[in-house]
Length: 223
Image (cartoon, rainbow, N blue to C red; front, top):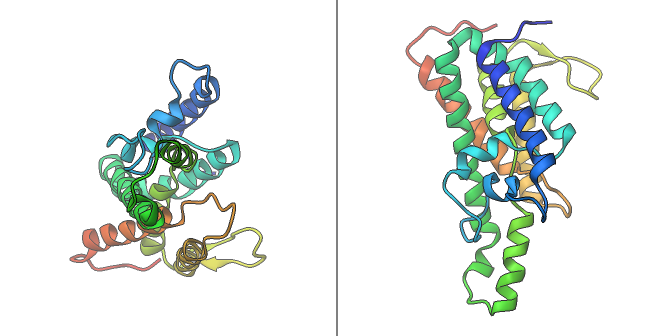
């Protein structure tokens, strides 16, 4: 059991408070729908605002979504904050989250390109806007995938137990497997899949690039 580091602790507190704010204020009778205003929407949506590239990282789609992300942030983010210090860690976290958001925006553009290319009638446009609203992206997963990738780069030979796999896997193979699963999930695009796979991939690849740049002139000690 490791102690909380300051940035990770504050991120967990903020994410938890925002989750409870969603539970209280979201809905048609609320004075402001937090998810509508702060989730990441397709740029063709009437609800899209540039700040959503940042704010979507603090919203979550359910209790288990929040718990899983915060557990991963505590387990791996705390270690990376100890390695880098608070300032560098928070910079890394936000950059990965924003890049994950950009990757998801690119995915939106590709997914909806056929509809975006035509002029819709009023009723069709309203239906399209409703579909975009329901497919907004929330969650810290993209930023946390960047943290996982950085951990795997820094401690590649550390063995992890990933449920339900009954044997330990080295961190370097675990992150490769997770990225591969997200790429497959994004390409396969199965019905009722509400996971932002390409946001995960974007965050992970961004994390790998940043940590490689930060370490390229330093001798690497593999752990």
